[in-house]
Image (cartoon, rainbow, N blue to C red; front, side, top):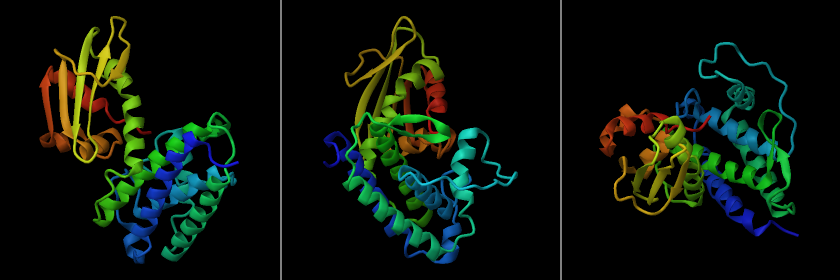
Length: 274
């Protein structure tokens, strides 16, 4: 048996992004691994450590036994502490150690994916002792690796791959949470609609509709009288939704129409990554 067809797009997206990450960081000299990235609190080395660590967990490797320092300002909750463990344990690794472990992890994970025979609904280990389906875990890995590829591209000044396979997985992951963002987090009024018009390498027009009970749904049909419309480019949308920038920092790249207070509330609720 081989990888289930419904999982292949996630494997392809992961492969594309992980190979791009390897290409980005392999030429870096030691000092460049300490460059800051848009991901709060993490350097280039930290992001690569995170990517390695989570793929090792997908392989079933045991998590490191390690005590975190108390002065990590960006670590505020259990989820962040969980993620920081794989990062902090590698903070003093050299550039050759990092690239070697990355390449070895890519080889192991690629072999695992080629031989993967489990069904999409098979349960696998998730963060903090949770369980999740294999399909969700692979979709989340493709999303995570693409977002971190973009973090690294910003850090090393090599933009690109904004429309690669991982970008479309990311689009779908971010769209899935938009109804909650609009209806619950931003408290859009009942019986209203909000339109998102995103342009650039990845384009989409989506309408989030809030029903009489305050529940949100999303579709691709335009709304004739939306409460608010938000127009922005794909890169800005990703950076907002992944908490890489604040709305105030990119306000000149966003066009809002209709209820401006609601639009502001949505923009400030858009960041949904832990």
